[in-house]
Length: 261
Image (cartoon, rainbow, N blue to C red; front, top):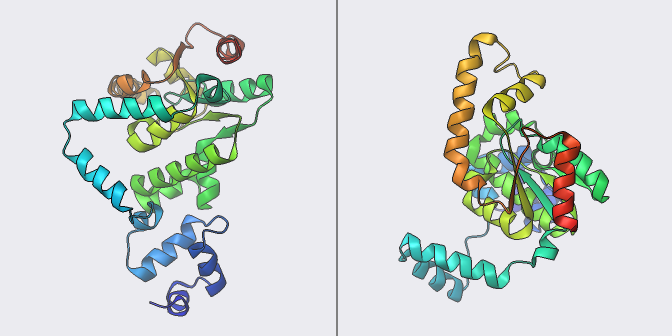
């Protein structure tokens, strides 16, 4: 299909298509959706990295596919040990992970002010990239499209911010490649609390999904299940901070002392 034909069928101008092909500037998911529909391709295919690989990379990938999980874990650890930034370099970028209600945004803003660094919320970056609200992204393009956008935004942040405080979405840890990028590029802090405290904090945010007293038990069960399911993933973070007994300033102080001391 020529660029002119694609422009006619997608409703996206020829100059805009040229910029997309040349990786110039940002492109919204809405525009990508139009292009994907015209090409009769799933949107997720347009959000993934180029599949073309060099001969060496292709051989390495095939070799890794044949390895048992235990061997892959050892290979990953060796690669990270050889190629990841030093602890001092990673401390320049701080990422806060944890369930909703852990205090990532509140702590992140104050921590950024204390350290005189920019504060970024990854989900807001996804919304800006897509030109849609987070719920609209998930509704229109599903979890796959959202996760691809999340990873692309994280990669751009790593390239653009030598120093930053980042608040991530609670489910980022379940996406292996995205979480690997985070762990290798940031000092990561897992903010966690008792399930009851998580619930109260989310209630304070006026979340209509659990605002009714009748939904209390269901919400608490969901929090507990999610914490249990992600526990091992969250524990891969550089540090863990139990925010249950601490004030916001105390949490900020502990993190700041860790990265500056």
